[in-house]
Image (cartoon, rainbow, N blue to C red):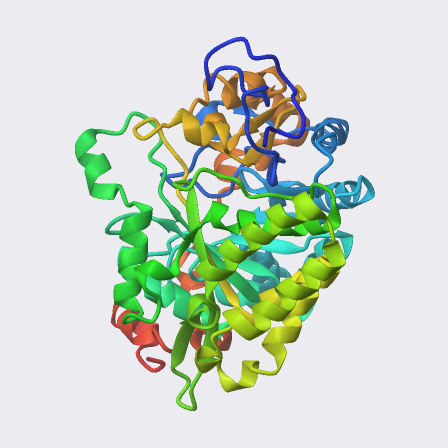
Length: 496
């Protein structure tokens, strides 16, 4: 299918007419809304932040409203990720979330490193931290899309020490849908991919998913450095197979567009377009796993294809969606599909005993109710593992751009594919944002010196590190892994 709405004319070869142009083959499945390019960290592999660019981009409430209204013209289920920079630096973020809800945005993700929640907990107290998280949740934040590059301090210099306090705040505030987002860089954290999954499984009361992102090497990086740091989707799934001792194998993963037969069937059953993930197959992969904990608290990962004949069922759905389009008889064909799903495609011998009674009902509700709530039940039972490899200048492919469905909303009304926005930044991101920018001097004049640069950068003193690492929450959170780095921190010798 084509995009659901065309915003720009086709005036130059792809990708120089983005916005979306008539050549684009996909609607927006996830819209990124940049709330600020300010950040209190300065990670070397980041796409952008204010000091690096030399200006501040921070759209007003009116500009945000305009951007979202442009997106809503597509007529698809709106899903927005609030991103940056670090979006929690915006003092009006709760009002922004409320605005999105009022405009009809049903799913809102907050893309954050989460440090503000931990800082409030450590310096202002638990009550204030929980109150802030509850405000965001009540306003309409569904999911926290949280940076998490590894379990150890060396692999996750971004927020390793703060994670235990962030999680405590989320638990107390009812923020129970967290996606862990590791940026995967060869040699930095590729040895901890299995541990990241085990960590997610340990915290499944709030963690719903792990979304690995092989690093996108932006900038004029030398070839030798590129070869040293580059990691691919194949590298990651191979490492996960090794580090889970074969529990999650390379052939347990599916490219994102494998979900298309499900969308096509549901649309044929409903008689109208709903939502499709028709990305290029090289953009990303994913799978679901059921996590079983033994009496000794060891994790067992059971991929979905051990329980369901996924390939057979997808082929069957594709066949039935075509039949529905030719013959109609929606109720009869729909009932037959559900019956066959349970009798023919569930591999009962691979279904854990505790799931045998509930699995058929969960699947039945997803297909019959076709609701956000029914899908939510599935997500609370299974851990989703995804992977999206964003492009850079060294592997750019316009066929992938044409099928991209992760887009950025722009203040000039255009909607730009992710890998165009961030890779061709001088043509799109920086060029447009400069039109709506504040110079650093203008920003300081308006907001004060404490609103940018070193004044807002988050730094950990030795005293703060000790305070965090000897806290019961830290010890409890990292207990299975603590022995690996305790020898480097004198104050941990009694806890490992």
